[in-house]
Length: 410
Image (tube, rainbow, N blue to C red; front, side):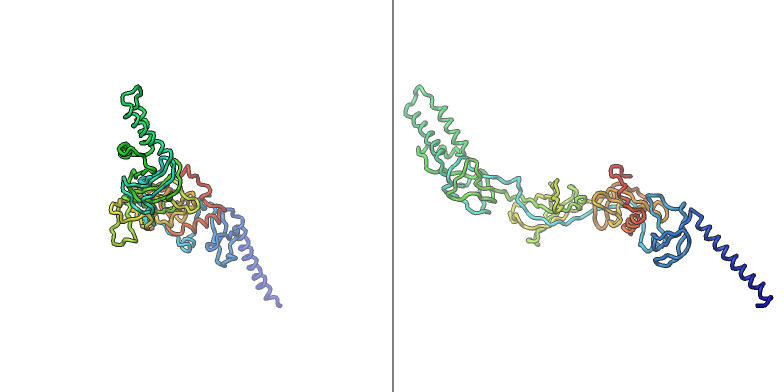
């Protein structure tokens, strides 16, 4: 190497040392700045103290100032994350909401119009005049004949007192109270006045005694057969008045918020497609939910004067709640965990915070917000589940865990 080349080499080495010193100084400056860290917009779990490439997707890391980060209960996203997560927002405004539910139902007997006919006295059922379930029994029709030794003795006692009064005439014994007491005993056992008068007229007590139906109705239950012995108070049959029927519809617990007893109920019958839908009102909502099926029952009472409808028939109940002015959001904007409902609200640009809300009716893809939001709030309408997942990933817990339902922010 000649002497002329030495200065050139020394100048090149010096330049390299100067550049390395500047780069090292820059890296040391970056490392020494406690307000800056580097992360990847695609993989936010990557956090580095110096610039470089993401070890996962090999994109350039982005510098982030800690002083500009969100509060502990907020979540800030980059524009790239907003785009990839399809996260969009909308300003909530009052609108009109309503709902319509179509429920499967079954026609059942109106239990408020059923009557049980029981034996007023013990004995043997000698004859039944109606023997089939579904038969209609008019009021006053003969139901059964019963053989009762106790009842026969009471009838004989009554006839004997009348005979003594007629024979002895005006004696020192006043038979009137005794006769009246014996007559009342027969009446209390279900013997009618006409039967007692017939007994006096004939002067002879039959072996069996007939009993008549106190009400009219259709037999829904028959518990005895001819020849059976019944105890006093034992059930003979059950009658139902089918002029009105109950339509009992199944409602899942998640649909209960859509039910309002002011709403109209239209009932349709698949067995009678030509029959016009009948209008009714919800007159009962079962206060208890089956824990196994999470199904509740509601009841609509219908008139059935022509007796075309029968218990056991299927039906469809359509419940339309009137529209009313309220705040509403797309259903997917509300996150629910069985205990509470939350939405994500944009506090500043690309910065979000979860907020608890109280929901109401659902219908047409919308859900009513009864409290928790105000008109003008900017709410995430798509991508709420991704925000929830990102929050859990960064913070280690769900934002719902720190919420208090008793102190919900209105």
